Image (cartoon, rainbow, N blue to C red; front, side, top):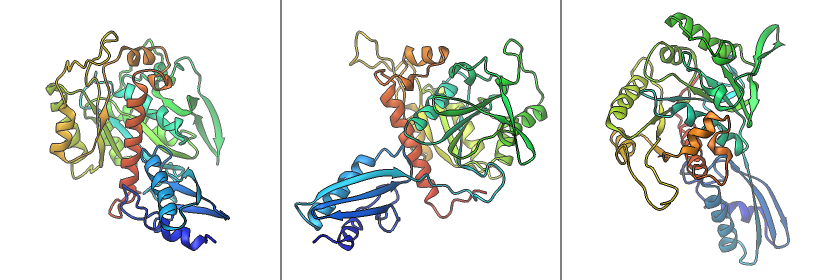
Amino acid sequence: MITKEQVLEALSHVEEPDLKKDLVTLNMISDVEIDGKNVSFTVILTTPACPLKELISNACRNAIIHMVDAEAIVTVNMTARVTTQRNQGNDFLKGVKNIIAVSSGKGGVGKSTVAANLAIAMAQTGARVGLIDADIYGPSQPIMFGVEHEQLFITERDGMQLMVPVEKYGVKLLSIGFLTDPAQAIVWRGPMAAKALRQLFSDGDWGELDYLFIDLPPGTGDVHLTLAASVPLTGAVVVSTPQQVALADTLKGIGMFRMEQINIPIIGIIENMAYFTPRELPDNKYYLFGKDGCKKLATELNIPFLGELPLIQSICEGGDQGYPAILDEQGPAYLPLLTIAGNVAQQIAIRNAQPAAVNS
């Protein structure tokens, strides 16, 4: 007879690759059921976007077969409980587990495109996701989501009037673009921009979210300082192209996040427009802006490299048409984007497992 104790003992030898502890110690095993040779249980992952789920599943199956019964028929179910370092008793965005800034040192590197696709990719895995378009002076997310003509609705909760985010592709979205005339330039001084940003957070009816992404303006400025001072960020994802001009500005942006009075962790760097592959030559890669620039910078600064995205016309077209590239499962950008989303989720889970990390 196979016993529950035998199953748990075997699974105590399966290590979570990122957290470096066994699944039983981490309380990641539940619902163990045994019927003769049939063994089933559930592994509770730290994120539904976990890139190692197949590796973990195979390790669990092998542990039962090799350590309990070679004839066992093992069923491994997967679910997820997204981790957080936030104090959930805090009233400010108390239902949001992780808040991630998407930043770039300069404009034109595809930061907003990456933010949109990253948010949708996370939602596709089953996570509850929101996106704030905090690019106050040039909001572009309404166009990328194809909702530029949407009107915001107001709801009342606990005596407060809140903006209801627009929902599309599984993502809750708020943008200053919903509140302004798209044909008019947004000319605001720093304090006005900071106030508008705070309202997107405090006056939004966000509900329960696993991840809230923030599409920041490029560079460093008032919006970034406001964010650091008033929002409990899990960390920042930095987007750059591999060319030296972009990397120089990226270094400055990372330096801002690492300033003592700001001290926001860097989740990692994403290299956009890494190479170009013509349709007629699918095996060729042309490194138009230099090769491995972001990867080298990540190594030098000892921060994670989250992956690279090719220079593909469909990524640009998808954003212009309100249908981001991650939605095309047959497209050339789908797998790179999905991989990057998994790596972002992985790094967030690793950070949340560190006792030294402190968020309010």
